[in-house]
Amino acid sequence: MKLFGGHDNEGHWSGEILGNDGKGLYLKENEVFERTIHWDDLQIMDPYSDSISSYKTLWVEDTRGHRHKIRKSRQNIRKLLESK
Image (cartoon, rainbow, N blue to C red; front, side, top):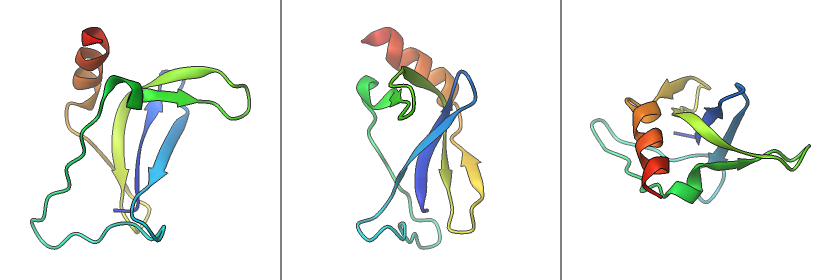
């Protein structure tokens, strides 16, 4: 996995490069990657307009550039934002 990110309500995406060297994380067969997300992790700042929005969906990008949606991310984001 190279990138953890998502899209906001307007379709813009933002992401964070995984791993210390910028090359991503290597997972072995059936190895699991877990990440704890807090409500403030869902905030996206647009570097061009300084506006802030929230992720609508989440995904991970593999080293080939393919994005894989995180199952139930939309529902879980909504629940997390409602609980703050």
